[in-house]
Length: 124
Image (tube, rainbow, N blue to C red; front, side, top):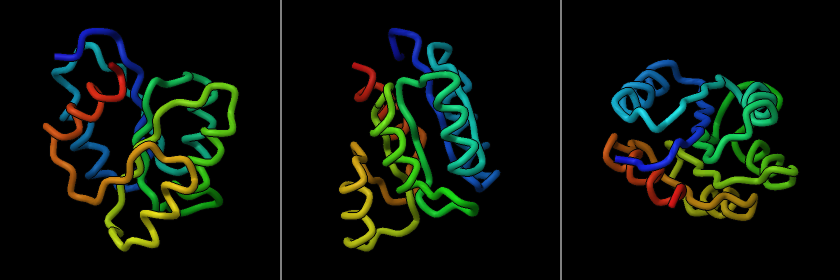
């Protein structure tokens, strides 16, 4: 169980993956969950709620993908840990994510226990 209240922002365009993440944290009362379906909406929500951790997909439609979102978060007045989660596990994609400032780059699928573990790790 996570000890303190944690604001977690999930930025993911895939509805099923957002649902699975939502269900993962459903029984984690210390996690307050926020969701966005693209990078631009994710950054707006980030600025409003100042989350403690961001989980973001890399490839999303629209003007801002996960790499750009990560750069914007890290350049903000409230930087926080960013975990990029992507189906693309090629080394150059991982390198791009880490160069953008990601704290971690995970290749999908990422299971519920691992997601909860990531929140524990980055909120400690």
